[in-house]
Image (tube, each protein chain N blue to C red):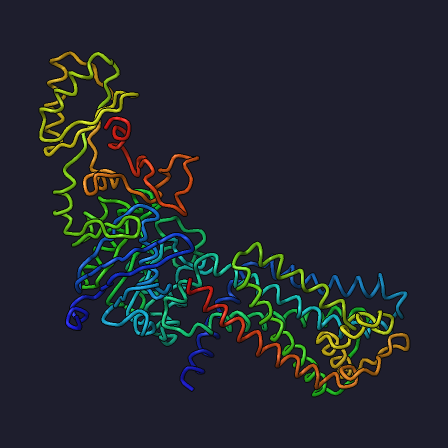
Length: 356
Length: 266
């Protein structure tokens, strides 16, 4: 075991945490080798932030052990803090301070002298393309700029391990690509990164290995390729308004590959997993045209977290997925149960639920 | 010793950050300065006329100083609660710095705020006819005593901010206790007309002791109608005020720090 600790930059064994009646973590194991990116994927309420808070010494686990950069988070939190950069879910920048002052403050609190802190702040401002806005109060920043500043704050002491809690949640597409670029740069420098996300695509883009958690438990782990192989390719969806044509459509879509199409009876929306994306789409539309079946809202979308969960567990995510729980269903906070998972992100998941 | 240096250094850095914050929210600073000025004018001219006129205005200032710095504790409560609320405290806690520095930084910046409050209040006092009739060193001692008391009250505010956990609760809880604590005292009136038990409370109130000791150090003798009683804390106001400040600081420092550890451990 001792050898393991040396090899892994982040390692957690059997972490448990309970908040009142809610079991937030029910035994989470994680491991990230030095210089790699570990993606922790899961819906809201799965336990991602709790895990991050335990690893970054902000919260004490009820059970289990964890090491960051070889130091036990419980026994030697100070050593962990010296080697860890944290960028939280809600960018913790001081809105009244300028970007430069924010970074200078963090640098000083890492123990740097005035001159060194000033130089470090300037370096990071340049690296995160914040130079122009450097002397404006950060309260005036866009969401993407704020995240970049928070990320820069996590890197002030050039820590060997960086934890990013949902670094792109709430960002617009531009802010997201910006943040991704910054994270890639960071990894290129040899830093070990733990990244939590609700987006399968993000984990796929950035992570070397992915751990999927749900209801405080690990439900799958592997490389992005492993996971994608299990989850399958893109989702083709289309709506057939005419009820008479639906059986025929189902038969046609069934011939496309090994996957069975789903149908939402109410809206007439079909969804089927495809392995060849656009080619399958063309082929399917050709067949439907030959059969003279009118279709609407044709879409091809990458698998969402919902799809991934469905493929991995044969079930939807149990946590409160992004605005997913139907109002009135309630209970999601304290008693996690099988709430019907609504769309976590984008299209491609409407057809499930009733259709299955 | 190294840890003490580290706490002092990090607290000073955080105090700098808090002062920058204050400077950029002039509204809250002005509100904090208007308050004592308003109390000076209200008490000096609305109540003062029937309480002794010019003599009362001289008597009043010692009480106003003690009250003004006590009210600054509300600042501490609000500042800490809002930092916790915005996740800034989490950022600090993820850094390799002593926990204690976060609260000490806040109480230090509020001490600087109290210096500003005292300056403005003193100027206002001069305008209504208050004068210091003591030697410079004694007067300096008077101001130091008020600042010591300000520091003690700031730890009370810090504890309230940490217990409140939300900005809204901190805002009301941070204010509500200030009125009984500053008014059930000899800050503005003589305790001699108060009913027995209330009078005892007022006489032992650290606000009374501080106000009385400051008046003595400033050479502001009370007018005939507002003469002090002969209770022990009144006769020994200065040593009693010093002991109070030390005990309050020590108690609430321990309380606030342990509370901080508990709140932030989750």
